[in-house]
Amino acid sequence: MVVKYSSADLEAAGSDVSKLSLARYDESEEKWTIVPTTLDRNALTLTATTNRFSIWTVMVTSGGSVAGSGTGKTPLDVTPVFAALGLTIAFVGCRIRK
Image (cartoon, rainbow, N blue to C red; front, side, top):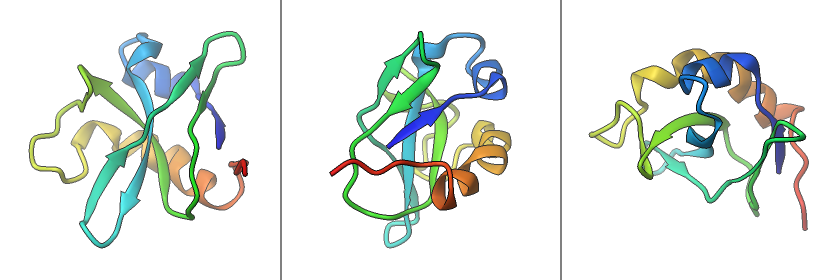
């Protein structure tokens, strides 16, 4: 899956693009799971490999964990990013690689 990150995503990361990662919502565990994400600064994209449909979003991470998290629940700082991008990715904004 390749996702173009937005200026709002970059702003949420404090202008540090290396803090952006893709995450999917695991309904059975009721939590977000950050997936290994490749960053392409030239193309302004985040890429992850997946074999399942889910709700996806761009998350701000810090040191390998979700910023503002501690409970495994949706962190507060991703709400604007999720609202702007998550549903778009789930339905029309993604490309799944085989």
